[in-house]
Length: 64
Image (cartoon, rainbow, N blue to C red; front, top):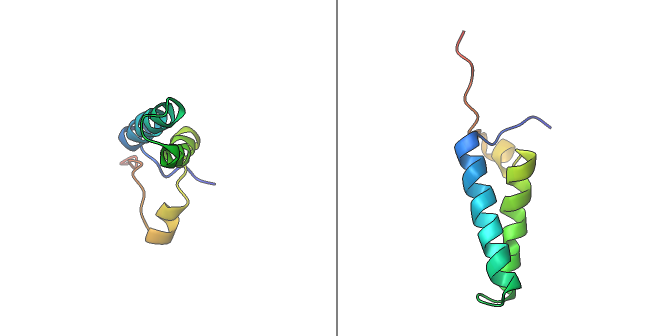
């Protein structure tokens, strides 16, 4: 499992996922907010299973 989530993408995923979970837990947005678990997990593990299927990566390559 190679990392395919870059730093900016990672920060956005963790922030959005955490916010959705907090809002769902507090009852502000309802149970659909628990979907925030997905971006939180992909941000923490730096791997998005959809990216290889789409041929994408947000990780910067080292230029040599």
